[in-house]
Length: 390
Length: 92
Image 1 (spheres, rainbow over the protein chains, first blue to last red):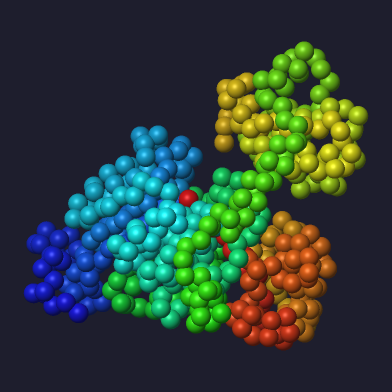
Image 2 (tube, rainbow over the protein chains, first blue to last red):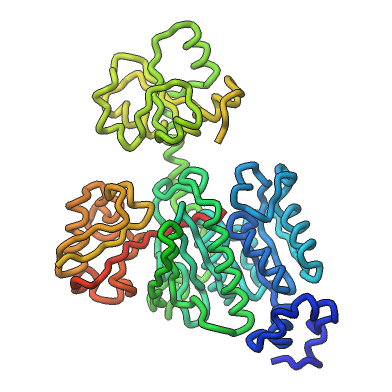
């Protein structure tokens, strides 16, 4: 443990002492703890829903170096929950927006930016420069990548994930603790678990979980309290219930077990079956598609086309093109309501669900079913800009 | 002996939108079987074609993963809670 004399780079100036006074007057932090925070190097993967509160609070707390990984641009729909980004930031790279705000909160924090997609080629190198990794990503491939890279570089993975109203938090990849694969050896098949864009998320939820992540990062740095190592915290925001499950290290884990068989990073897209998904889309390229402009032209010409909308009722309320609504989940039960002799154009929000519907209909003998390419969003773009997009 | 099975959000649409279901069973395996009998749509989300539990779904008896207990044969009693915990990835 460095003494004050040895830790000159992390000695606190008078300004910093004043800034962090509320930390310093607590024996659990004190000067020593604050210097540990200043010496710490934390990598935040994702500057979005989880990354926003995470980075904000770590900067406020005085974590000396914050690395940020995000290649994305601020989108209007992000503002409902990604509190690092403001309305004026829409269109800017997330890292530009993030670093502006973090510098404004605490100019004593050094930021390091990685404007890149984290992948098997760069992850190990990037992780080596940090002490703790905080995973705030939004897809399974990256979560497995982050986990494996953490185990291989020996860095703890402070993890959180969210879905609609529920969240999970834990710490993986510590030496004696479990890793993500100990809990979930395999990812779900693509398409089974919707993303935030498809499933929705309560805006405050990543706030709740992101701050839990930040809390665990700070506790790890300080060596204080009881961490979430080996504990899976489950948050149900609607019920406001917090539960806990035990996560055990799996001795047979291929990455962190006693005899690891995987000692390198792999192709995570393949692992998560995303190639499988691409194959699915090429298969569904055999599904007949119709462009929005062409549908419009043919409807205006008075052609007898049955427009089937397979979205959910609450989506229909946001906007619709007067199609008949049968949600995708209800289609098998209600397929008898459709006339297989008629031409049917199926649409959803973006074209994914409707492609599944068309496949189902064609298998059920509907020879004249086709998919509206790009869904109602493409219709709003190319045919009717007055339609609200969501 | 009614046992409570907690249904996570992603699976609630297949369990009649309920957040928990009561089943009568003596083991976790029986409980899950009873669950998917009551709610057949849940079966393919919990079990693969060979009848085994899907590997991205974890089942806990109270706070312990059944993989570290007796798996399907883990005995369950009235005051126990069975939790189904699927992996979710959302973060952005």
